[in-house]
Image 1 (tube, rainbow, N blue to C red):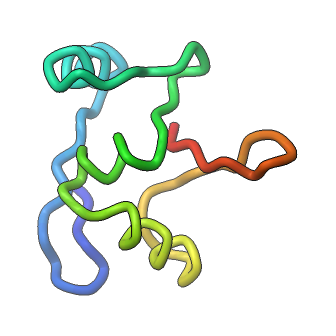
Image 2 (image 1 turned 120 degrees about the vertical axis):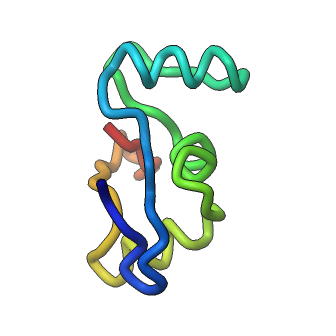
Length: 77
């Protein structure tokens, strides 16, 4: 179980790919072929705003992520 680095709020995210796909299907979201989700989906999964994820990335904390392509779009594996 992960926790918010600031407030200690539990970040209960789907722990397997099957659970992630099921969660996304139930919530009208998409899992990419590389098994990652976009920033808005990741924010919804951990019940935080996309801005919070941006701040966490800038501080070097939060869930793992990677940048894709020349535009530097952020994806969460």
